[in-house]
Length: 243
Image (cartoon, rainbow, N blue to C red; front, side):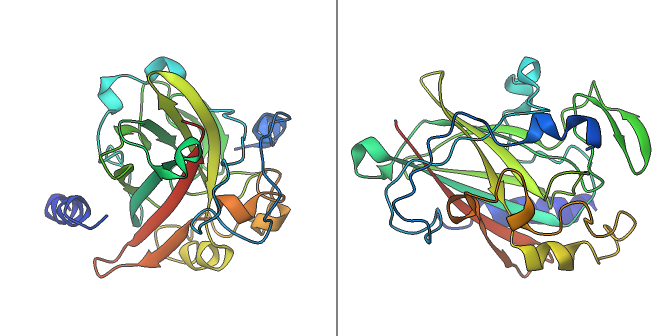
């Protein structure tokens, strides 16, 4: 397993370029900055508009965003299908040129729908993960406006479709809070695999179009995800901010 993880990280670094009581807290923020001039495009095309603003809750864990999670591999021992995450940050105030040295914070649940840093209720019962920081990471963009993380394909919890949270900071100032969606058909495939089958398919929110966050903003928040030769997936997503 350790040898496989090292190979996974090496491939990443050298590559180019839930629960009913929290459903309301995890719905779309009332303060959005979505630009609706192009509602058919997604975040990876040439449209230079700011990413939609979304809620940071209910599991942002601000108190633990320290150097301890300033790393590429954010699995911290959690099992799941490997996911290489590449996020590109572009500055809409500079004709959507890459933005260097922006801080990118991401977090998501594990394959079973549990978040680190909190006590969660889920299909495996109550788990106290208050001292854990798995599936959370911080990186700063390089000269190409890019960061990379090594993680696992996220699970799901009642009331939400599969997603990753992201916040972008410039000079310690929060510029945007958004979320990243995964293709519906791929979610279905993943949750039939051996590692995810015990939790099974998400019957509470079957598709992105029914999700409280992504229903009106999927055009800007759907990531590009492809299978790789290592048995995992590569996710690429672009987030445009007012830098």
